[in-house]
Length: 374
Ligand code: FE2
Image 1 (cartoon, rainbow, N blue to C red):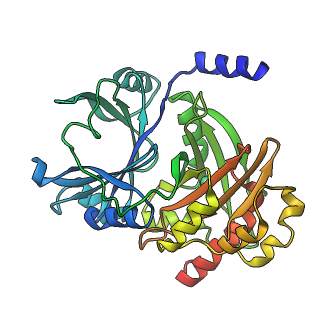
Image 2 (cartoon, protein in one colour):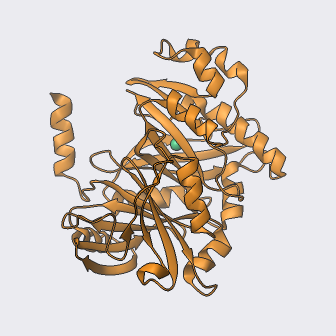
Image 3 (cartoon, rainbow, N blue to C red):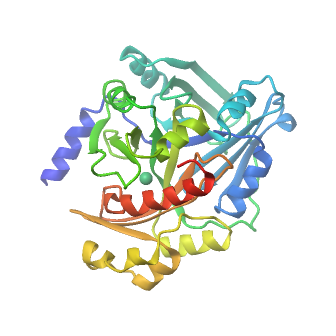
């Protein structure tokens, strides 16, 4: 009862009510080919398209969906286009973390009145399927948040896009929704952006990790997690901390040329099945040595899964006061060591796998050493 009252109060005081993540848009060098990776390897379905064939002369976009997760892959058709410049500088990366809201213009005006910088002005798009209202603000780096209102729209994605019939060959791997999206920001930027999410977006500071929590012999980082009023949108923000060698966050900032999205955690309710299919589909994951499994049950206690199955798939486990979670991280999904994915199954736990940080960062360091960037 206490919990219910508390949650209700939290929502009533919500400065910026969010219904969830609407979509995530990537600017990429070759959206047509990337769309095949997302379908064949990650189990997404191609549901809508915008490009020259639909009257769009400057860019091509592929909308890919798996349950509640919607990704848009966009490429420019000319070298002068801002998307081409974004890709030249950052490589393939996330441009937009779009937030699903009930009133896009109000969300935008409220954010501006609390200090946000406009990325684009309120816009209404219409077609035979209704209307979409949108407006956007800047966040870290060149990343933006678009507020999307779609309550009066019933088309495949948005006006301007044509629906596509998904290829039945590509089946879901069981990914359900975006659990959290992590940003890497420059040294000294973490607190600034946490304050932005608190003051402008009405988010709450959920957890703080310092370099004592997240450090190995060589590298360190600091992280704070902010979450919106109903807890459906969570943004951990990382910044590099001083270590003996270059941290994975510095490596990211060097290759991305600035702050940006580092990873998105995608939730499943059957991680064994999801990861086993992803592996069959050719997705590369970070490797954690077998000795991780020797004492993991001493640390996390009893779990429903068979330890041998987890070990075979290299899935990690952690526990907090409320339950446990299972997680695994892919290697970067483009040539630059920037964006990657986490696959997560929560069994009560609301945290982020702090008990796995050391094993994970050592795994990343082994990859950095191979790249010559440690
Ligand atoms: Fe994560």
